[in-house]
Length: 134
Image: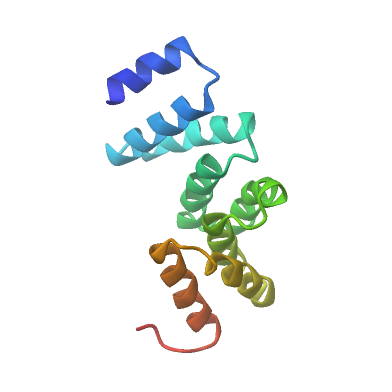
């Protein structure tokens, strides 16, 4: 899988899909720094593409770079304002600095059929409301 993706990247170096797939494979293999580099390249080529932007934003959130994650997600929301995972991650990015805006994005994230996104959004809403986690 990973070697095929690396070969595909040589054949199609500008392919956002290949960069994103290889970034995921690298992350699973424990090569987080290289994965993030590829996600940054993919995001630079296609800033409104949700999947690489969301994966890059999560990597940034994990490093405490909430403001940068917010900037990465902004073009996705301009293109797809109701994208559930983008709204969830933007809610996470805003939670410490702008709880009201965070709640708005979390409410949109809960409008999905994806049970995991819905539960994560609801859990963060409870935290923002001062309730204990379940």
